[in-house]
Length: 104
Image (tube, rainbow, N blue to C red; front, side, top):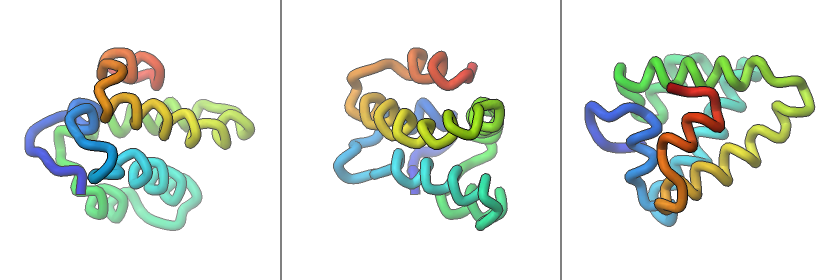
């Protein structure tokens, strides 16, 4: 579970310890499985402990992913993992992460 209450998705990820939370891997896996049709949105949000405050950012992230070409979709997961690790470690800001992935 990503943990934290009443925080938007990216702000929550920014506060996690990457060595214990592994949220970046869970998020990438969840997006991959959801987009392939392996799980439903409800299963995805339940498994990750997402809250209503996360919905808008999740929709923005998935819209960004959905607009990518097939080859860029394959690259997305490496980019997402790298950027979330840097975010969790405090090496980049939540604002720069949001800009990179088309989020507000």
